[in-house]
Image 1 (cartoon, helix red, strand yellow):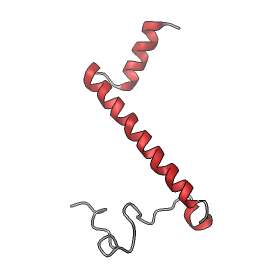
Image 2 (cartoon, rainbow, N blue to C red):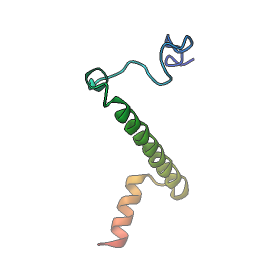
Image 3 (tube, helix red, strand yellow):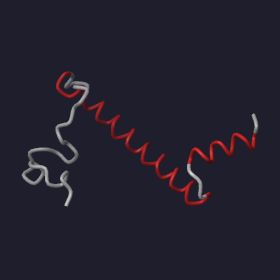
Image 4 (cartoon, rainbow, N blue to C red):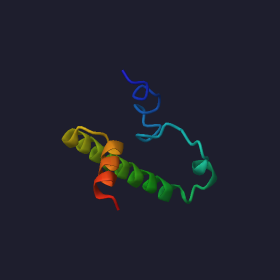
Length: 80
């Protein structure tokens, strides 16, 4: 099973879901007042990224080409 699912503290309630203690840029310890806004922005950007990824998957399923191939094809067809 996944190593992320087996991290300690999740079952006992010591940490919320998705909090793995990873803060590479140090925003959480340095600015506790701004952290809820940064957390909300992270969730919104994650949702936007999921929509973008699903769009690329649908594009690939319908055209049988990747995103870059479709972009190049569109640029060559329209010749701005």
